[in-house]
Length: 75
Image (tube, rainbow, N blue to C red):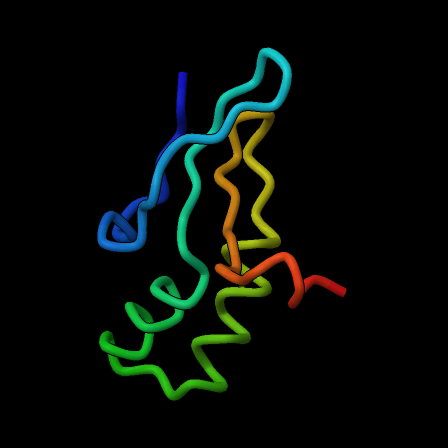
């Protein structure tokens, strides 16, 4: 079963698979934009995202959040 993130449907970009595990994937920048559009400042949105969204483990089906970039941008 794939677990989605409530209220972040506009940021959903697909499903990833790692071995036998599948999980929902969201665009990090779009998620932060959703929070800003709900009235948060950019700083508040980033703090909320990092603590409550990325920091919220709900089991093996926990969604992943991706920064879209080229391979050259990866550190």
